[in-house]
Length: 75
Image 1 (cartoon, helix red, strand yellow):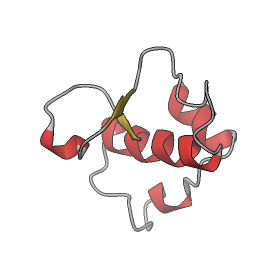
Image 2 (cartoon, rainbow, N blue to C red):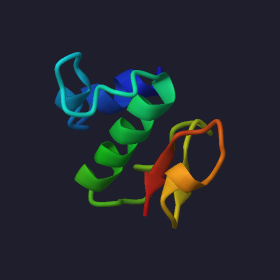
Image 3 (cartoon, one colour):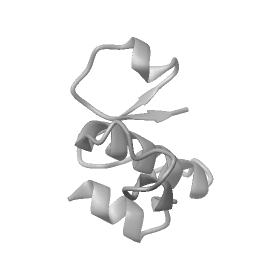
């Protein structure tokens, strides 16, 4: 799963743990959005660091304002 990859490969996912600051909402979409964004930024927004096999897209605006089933990576 891409969420596991992002967390294992450099994203700061400690805040997604049950007592973590970003645990709620406890959904795959919310956790993936946070992890993918963390991974992308920790990799210096390098080309390819946002490629999660079509499970995320880069957003120019606040993704909470855009109805979508995909997690977002903030640009």
